[in-house]
Image (tube, rainbow, N blue to C red; front, side):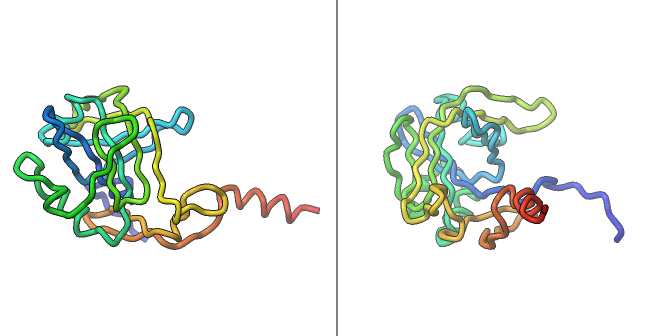
Length: 193
């Protein structure tokens, strides 16, 4: 198979997430992010990336707080819309019908329609000199998960909600369960005499 040299988002898919922030008057903003990262499990550190020119970048830089909200496919239209317009001009919560709920530790709200919400306080901002993007590294203050999506193992089960992935400027649903982590080791151990 022939490979070609391409120039686009090289690591994909990534989660399509809704990131909330707030302005000096306490007015909430919501933006779609395709750059959402788990940087560390212990301690739990999450990062998001936004272009320096965006309203969301300015708000997170000013306040040092944000939330990451993982949407289900049923609100895909709102997810797309929040990535296409700026909160400078309009209230995206009102425009989309999304419901802001108070977070426990940070001022930006969590989003009711998203089954997973992560409250973050900025610990570091990485200004990428070779890019137009800043990466906001956030300490996780709290995680909120809708009870109905929890699996028997105490973790969110993607079979119980359809998460949205982003790749090649398209949205995809994440639905097919393949195997539990460490399955190859378990099978290898079980097959030994």
